[in-house]
Amino acid sequence: MKKKVAVIHPEAGFSSSGGSQLSAYEMAEHLAKFFNVKLLSSSKCSELSVVIPCIPRGKVKKAQRNKIVDWLLTRFVSNPSLLIEAITSFLTYTPYLLFKKADVIYPNNDYGGLAVAYVARKIYKTSILYTERAGMVSGGKVLRRNLKFKPDCLVVFNDETKRYAQSINPQQRVEVIPNGVNLSLFSPSGEKFDHGLSGSVVLTVGSLNRRNHKRLHLAVDAVSKVPDGALLICGDGPDKQYFEELCSRKLGPSRFKIVTVDFSDIPKVYRSVDLFSLPSEDEPFGRVYLEAMASGLPVVATDDAMRRTLIGNAGFVCNVEDSQEYSLALKAALDKDWENLPIEQASNYSWQNVAERYAEVINSM
Image (cartoon, rainbow, N blue to C red; front, side, top):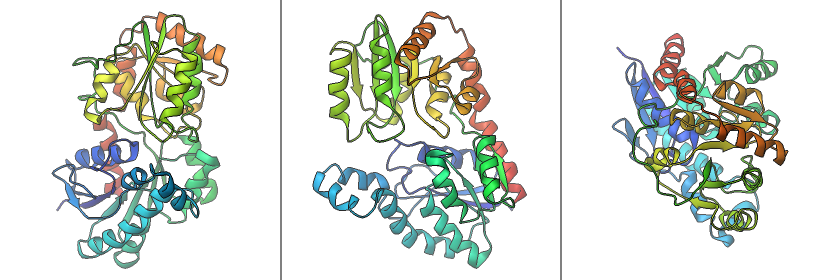
């Protein structure tokens, strides 16, 4: 008998704009080779989906585009979309898992899914597998909160986060497993996105939000100093107008474009540019770097331990807060012939390899 694994993410199928929902979907697909997998989500997104109604975070974020709604929701809580998803999914997903018992529950939607799994474990002693996608963001605040649920196995992306988690709870089982990338979807071969920009085009991908850790304004500053450089920003968010005005002022209207595309078109976007860069601060992992490299693009990124490991010899890391140093790194990357180095680096993170490592963990639980 195959083990029954319940993968949780209410947002899977509703939106493809975040790494956790994409990882939940792809992990479910690959784990299905080893286990009897159900993906609990609010929308149908695969043959493995079990649709359970709730209010996913994406629906709340859409409502927050109305300034009055946003003001009302943020008066009492800093992240209302996550809280509303957690409450509504807890009320509907918990009964399902009490009637449809699983051997392992794998929540991917932060504390909302962990709360559901915690109740199921109290009643059935069901094992909880959890991947901490926030890493050391905000000094490990999210990690410390989620450790209170005491997952039977915590997966993190690097040794630094593992050491921190075990300093909080020395008895906590922690495994280091990276995210994966779909090498059949992201590749240099295929259609390209028609962005209409000329010159050396640098791509950055992220939410258009001045208050998050993506720091897209640093990329705008750096590209403005690259001769013949142009910037393509792929994303959406509450500060889209701000970034439109910033790019117009720094780059001029002919040297930038901001686009929002469906996830199915993202591979075309990667293939249409010359270089990828994202100057995030404390990025827990960054699957977009893998997607870019799998598409044949070199990468310029923040100089930190995770980026050095991810990028290897397929790009440059630098002090992105120094716009001069950042721009010189972009120019050097654009001038270099990278051959197959980005593709070779991305191949180390294939979903097949990652799923096999997760399967070993699940079988040991």
